[in-house]
Image (cartoon, rainbow, N blue to C red; front, side):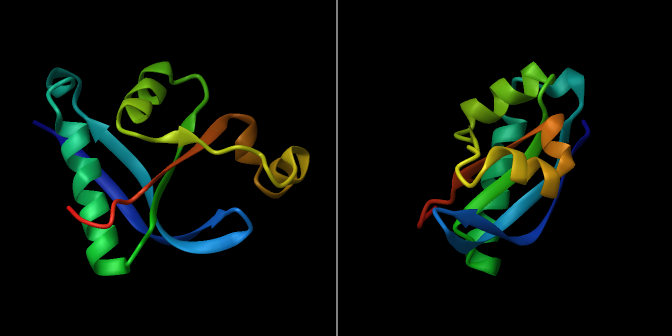
Length: 112
Protein backbone atom coordinates (compact mmCIF):
# COMPACT_ATOMS: atom_id res chain seq x y z
CA UNK A 1 0.00 0.00 0.00
CA UNK A 2 1.12 3.52 -0.73
CA UNK A 3 -0.35 6.57 0.97
CA UNK A 4 1.28 9.88 1.66
CA UNK A 5 0.50 13.33 2.89
CA UNK A 6 2.70 16.42 3.02
CA UNK A 7 1.68 19.41 5.09
CA UNK A 8 3.05 22.47 6.84
CA UNK A 9 1.96 25.26 9.14
CA UNK A 10 0.51 28.36 7.54
CA UNK A 11 -2.12 31.05 8.15
CA UNK A 12 -5.69 31.05 6.86
CA UNK A 13 -7.69 34.20 6.19
CA UNK A 14 -11.16 33.82 7.63
CA UNK A 15 -13.63 36.68 7.88
CA UNK A 16 -10.90 39.30 7.82
CA UNK A 17 -8.76 37.50 10.41
CA UNK A 18 -5.61 35.46 10.02
CA UNK A 19 -5.74 32.21 11.98
CA UNK A 20 -3.25 29.35 12.36
CA UNK A 21 -3.77 26.61 9.77
CA UNK A 22 -2.19 23.47 8.35
CA UNK A 23 -1.85 23.37 4.56
CA UNK A 24 -2.00 19.92 2.92
CA UNK A 25 0.24 20.18 -0.10
CA UNK A 26 -0.45 16.67 -1.35
CA UNK A 27 -2.52 13.69 -0.34
CA UNK A 28 -2.31 10.51 -2.35
CA UNK A 29 -3.65 7.00 -1.83
CA UNK A 30 -2.69 4.29 -4.31
CA UNK A 31 -5.67 3.42 -6.50
CA UNK A 32 -6.02 -0.16 -5.26
CA UNK A 33 -6.43 1.04 -1.66
CA UNK A 34 -8.97 3.81 -2.19
CA UNK A 35 -12.45 3.79 -0.62
CA UNK A 36 -11.10 2.04 2.50
CA UNK A 37 -10.84 5.05 4.83
CA UNK A 38 -7.15 5.72 4.21
CA UNK A 39 -7.65 9.35 3.12
CA UNK A 40 -9.93 9.94 6.11
CA UNK A 41 -7.29 8.52 8.47
CA UNK A 42 -4.61 10.74 6.91
CA UNK A 43 -6.76 13.87 7.20
CA UNK A 44 -7.63 13.01 10.81
CA UNK A 45 -3.93 12.64 11.61
CA UNK A 46 -3.17 16.00 9.94
CA UNK A 47 -5.90 17.54 12.12
CA UNK A 48 -4.43 15.98 15.26
CA UNK A 49 -0.92 17.20 14.44
CA UNK A 50 -2.25 20.64 13.49
CA UNK A 51 -4.23 20.95 16.72
CA UNK A 52 -1.60 19.53 19.08
CA UNK A 53 1.67 20.69 17.51
CA UNK A 54 0.73 23.94 15.77
CA UNK A 55 -2.46 25.03 17.57
CA UNK A 56 -4.04 25.29 14.12
CA UNK A 57 -7.73 26.06 13.77
CA UNK A 58 -8.09 25.11 10.07
CA UNK A 59 -6.87 22.57 7.52
CA UNK A 60 -6.55 23.98 4.00
CA UNK A 61 -5.62 22.55 0.62
CA UNK A 62 -5.76 23.20 -3.12
CA UNK A 63 -7.34 20.83 -5.63
CA UNK A 64 -7.64 21.00 -9.41
CA UNK A 65 -11.10 22.15 -10.43
CA UNK A 66 -11.35 19.26 -12.91
CA UNK A 67 -10.48 16.54 -10.36
CA UNK A 68 -14.07 15.57 -9.57
CA UNK A 69 -13.14 12.47 -7.56
CA UNK A 70 -10.81 14.46 -5.28
CA UNK A 71 -13.37 17.24 -4.87
CA UNK A 72 -16.04 14.72 -3.84
CA UNK A 73 -13.62 12.99 -1.46
CA UNK A 74 -12.64 16.24 0.25
CA UNK A 75 -16.29 17.29 0.54
CA UNK A 76 -17.10 13.93 2.19
CA UNK A 77 -14.24 14.59 4.61
CA UNK A 78 -15.80 17.92 5.62
CA UNK A 79 -13.91 20.37 3.39
CA UNK A 80 -15.74 23.14 1.58
CA UNK A 81 -14.63 25.37 -1.27
CA UNK A 82 -13.43 28.73 -0.01
CA UNK A 83 -15.43 31.65 -1.37
CA UNK A 84 -14.12 34.78 -2.97
CA UNK A 85 -15.44 36.98 -0.20
CA UNK A 86 -12.65 39.51 -0.53
CA UNK A 87 -12.85 40.18 -4.26
CA UNK A 88 -12.67 37.40 -6.86
CA UNK A 89 -10.49 39.03 -9.52
CA UNK A 90 -8.07 40.47 -6.97
CA UNK A 91 -7.59 36.98 -5.51
CA UNK A 92 -6.87 35.58 -8.98
CA UNK A 93 -4.35 38.33 -9.67
CA UNK A 94 -2.62 37.62 -6.37
CA UNK A 95 -2.87 33.84 -6.81
CA UNK A 96 -3.21 32.85 -10.51
CA UNK A 97 -3.58 29.15 -9.57
CA UNK A 98 -7.16 29.99 -8.59
CA UNK A 99 -7.96 29.86 -12.31
CA UNK A 100 -7.44 26.08 -12.26
CA UNK A 101 -7.64 25.17 -8.58
CA UNK A 102 -10.14 25.45 -5.76
CA UNK A 103 -8.95 26.33 -2.28
CA UNK A 104 -10.77 24.18 0.25
CA UNK A 105 -10.75 24.25 4.03
CA UNK A 106 -12.33 22.78 7.10
CA UNK A 107 -12.15 23.71 10.77
CA UNK A 108 -10.18 21.52 13.13
CA UNK A 109 -12.25 20.29 16.04
CA UNK A 110 -11.11 21.31 19.52
CA UNK A 111 -10.78 17.72 20.70
CA UNK A 112 -10.02 14.37 19.13
